[in-house]
Length: 138
Image (cartoon, rainbow, N blue to C red):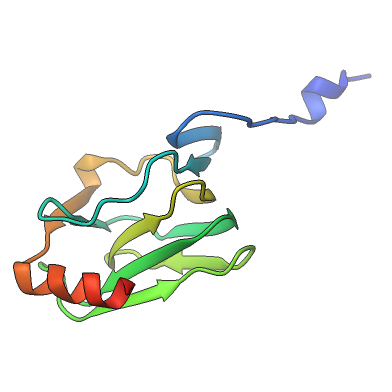
């Protein structure tokens, strides 16, 4: 008979800041993201684009906004989605996005385990887009 540890894994995640991959299995990973600093919106803001995978976000607690942008090579039309706790947000492959969590926000993230800088891009936003983002975030 197998030991319980061979059948089941329980992870009690209590700490860490930023992105922490906790489970990896057959090509996918589950991570937690805990925001321990206030989000800073400024000239260095970049939007990410994963070229090979969707990415799923679940706000577990706190407040966060997801920025989404149309466009293939550069972010174009911007959208700001105020996240609701316990709702799944699936950012499709190739879509520019940037998570803006507030201090204390806690998120669950699911994506392909091979998501990396080699198959993703980070693109800066223009000054006009930055002004628009600040307005969207109110």
